[in-house]
Length: 249
Ligand SMILES: [Zn+2]
Image (cartoon, rainbow, N blue to C red; front, side):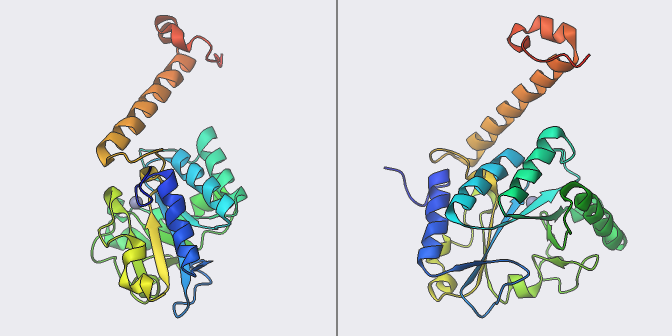
């Protein structure tokens, strides 16, 4: 029998259902009341849009509307590709919100405002929706708890969302703050921002972090080879398993 607390699709379902059973009401960054038993479900999409879509479908079945924060300047995925754009459209069609996951390490301190404005505008072109919320990717300590808006937009580590309510994250595929339902603040029913990363949850059973990423990398490698075959006839000839790939020319 699977462990209801494991990092798996079943484990994620069990976690969300557990919080709802405990009396939590799903809220959003815009509407949250930090004095109520409100739950903000946030996902930072660091590696894989497909994993985000898988969790988004599950949440939709549970009646949960979440925030998905996506990177623009990452080597991991491309929002402007056919699959990337389709993934974002699916997230929105399932009733979720898409915000900017912003990698501040790519800029100097003096460039942050302008860069966040530029990236938000680019993301708005992709989503067709206003981007009114930002989350920092791998934030430095100086950004955690930063009170100021960024490019006129709220961000997920402002005190209202980070210290005025409980906060819990699954960073690196583990619960450094403890399992959410075990937290004192959650037992007391304090408002909660729950941050998860879809990639850790899209497994059928428990899988360690490294093996999960190895499996992800192997899938990406195969996808890259398929694209090579699609774009280059000698490669397609050399690897017959890709011969059913469409030739664009
Ligand atoms: Zn991130």
